[in-house]
Image (cartoon, rainbow, N blue to C red; front, side, top):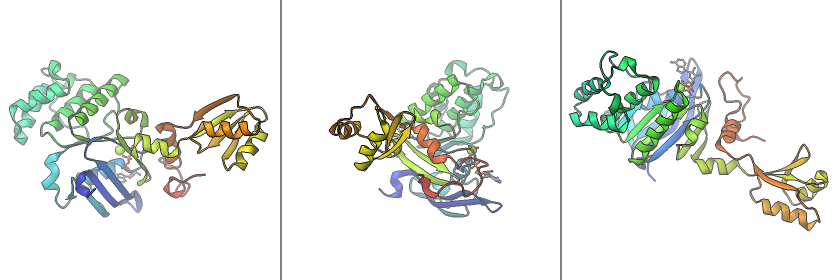
Length: 316
Ligand SMILES: Nc1ncnc2c1ncn2[C@@H]1O[C@H](COP(=O)(O)OP(=O)(O)OP(=O)(O)O)[C@@H](O)[C@H]1O
Ligand SMILES: [Mg+2]
């Protein structure tokens, strides 16, 4: 694939504030279709990255492309294909949602029909004639999305879109993102809360301290690291010896054994049965994006002392 096949490509992107790296050699690839979760703890560089992509902050070094177009150099060529909600947009509080959108549509030369269309797509049509100031946080967020949809962008960037929303609001925004992706838009959504993104994302990038720690489909990112088997067995020490001799990595966990990095429980039972040992219980543990996220980013959270986390997310 060439860079043009991706919605976003960054290479060795760097940005420091007062000598401290906010983005530290970030290589990011966001597919041109689907929802891409941009995940990392607080202060890991998500907003800074998005602001650099949008030309709001200047990168120290590195390369960035949006749909193959080099930014910020040629940003004007591609900016019309990008819609972003980075900060809460400014709407007139006493005007209705529809009037606010009308004004925006006129300002960017979007057709009048676009307003009704985006009101429909964000589910705001029924409340469109109420003044903005009476809107709930979730409705305000949906109006912000409606506003970015006016220019029908190919790529939508949401920086923590569910901040401050209640579970129902989060659910709604998630649904909106899914719908947009299904309509063919590329969606980049940042979050420090994995659970918010896990259910809607097709692919994810996980960053910590401004560096990429993992990326791929949710299944790939989880699958790469999942696969521990918990074994309940009489004489766990003896069983551990059998498995260890067979080359498996085994540790004691209470009265049970955990076989790390093993995805085939049948192999475990087979090896033990060969030695006349029979398991009482067997279960797979450890999978799930949440545990992968926590494992990858531990030591990468805001305020953690520097140099504690091993490079590249490899831990033992
Ligand atoms: N304008 C600025 N001046 C100084 N430091 C900044 C500035 N913007 C960001 N930083 C620092 O850069 C680092 C990355 O911040 P950034 O806002 O990109 O993180 P984030 O991943 O978006 O975090 P959050 O999840 O809290 O939104 C932080 O240490 C932050 O304090
Ligand atoms: Mg941020």
